[in-house]
Amino acid sequence: MMNHIDAINVFLSRLESNFCVTLPDARTIVEAFHREMSAGLAGKESSLQMIPSFVGRPCGAEKGRYLALDLGGTNIRVLAVELDGNRNAAIRAVSRFVIEQDKMCATGEELFDYIADCIHLFFKEHGVDVQRTFHLSFTFSFPVAQSSLTSGRLIAWTKKFTACNVEGQDVVALLTAALARRRMEFIRVAALANDTVGTLVAGSYFDPSCDMGVILGTGTNACYPERSDRILKCPEPGAPSEMIINMEWGGFSQLKTNIYDRLLDEASPNPGRQRLEKMVSGMYLGELARLIIVDMMTKGLLFCGVSPDVFSGQYLLHTEQLSGAAAGFDFFADFGLTDVSETDSRTIREISRIISARSARIAAAAIAAVVTWMDAKVERFHTIAIDGALFEKYPGYPDCMIEILHDLLGEGARRIRLAPVRDGSGIGSAIIGAVALHNHLERDVNN
Ligand code: GLC
Image 1 (cartoon, rainbow, N blue to C red):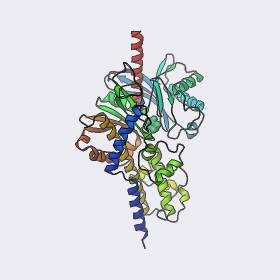
Image 2 (cartoon, helix red, strand yellow; image 1 turned 180 degrees about the horizontal axis):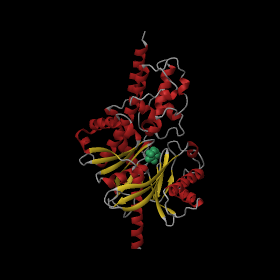
Image 3 (cartoon, rainbow, N blue to C red; image 1 turned 45 degrees about the vertical axis):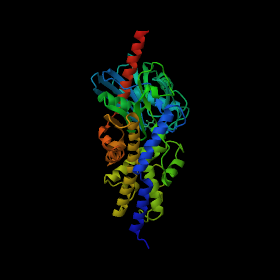
Image 4 (cartoon, rainbow, N blue to C red; image 1 turned 30 degrees about the vertical axis):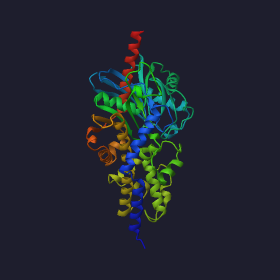
């Protein structure tokens, strides 16, 4: 008869193999990424949308003061950013607002009115004089089919957003209408960008070797500069030589899933979609852990004598708590659990490690895929600008990424630098605004 500790160890080692991304698995991910990237760029059926952003990398000489609005996964930020024209950017003013769940699920009009109110509050808080026109860059962290630098339709909500009457609509038009309802016509939207694009643009403004932007936060996604002649679905005569492509890699679907992935997906607001995101990003890792914990409790392997109902609420366990457990913090009190045994604590730490290791290995394999797409033998130096709490705060996460990059790319991995870029999406958005205005002025002069 197996004793209690043995039964726990057997469960955990099965869990580890169900969540494991072996080196051959990682190689399969790289190959599948290349196939899907190629199909997405050609406008064929693909789980990678490969969306043209209508902007390239900055030259570093962009200058001036710009306003940026950053609508991310959990908050809205309004920022005034100053660019010195010499690869330096500083945030001169910033206001941050939490987006409550009821706003994410409201009507589109209510959501955009709230965004306009946040901008209004920013002006009030920082005593900004509203006598002149302001050019605003809008970072909208969702899949948008852009038709120009200042227009694009939301393809589908991701993360926790479900606000109605927004999918299929031009989000710049929705924001402009909300600004008009709030009598703020003095604000003009100068550019629309995804947060990954903002991150890459900020990263390459500071460092010209930067050629990829990655978000590892509430959601996950990446972008890179693509040669215009390879963007087959969008042939633009006379287009600049490169354009940044928002991959929407959270949608990548060719991954091995396990029972917990399937349970999470089926109960999610978007079943069958965002498969990579559901295995990698901060919005979902806590939920995966919760499903495992409930399973272990039901089998009598964890918190003996406590009802699994303690963990019955969907998304009740947050990734920050899981990451806290990995860092040795007591996360049990949050759930009313006292007198937790050492074995229970160790089990939770193991679950945390297993889930985050898979996330980091998939993210790194995806980075390896993009780098080798741009530079097959990794002969050049690549800086990857990364924003998001998973990368920054989850214990051991970057090391886990670096390890698999070495296994996949050998010596080439030494030429890849994973660089955290704080506030990248906001600062990058301001730089995109500067590029947009410059292009606009140039057009006016030439016409
Ligand atoms: C989701 C969005 C994507 C965004 C990412 C990170 O995957 O669809 O557009 O870049 O989250 O915020």
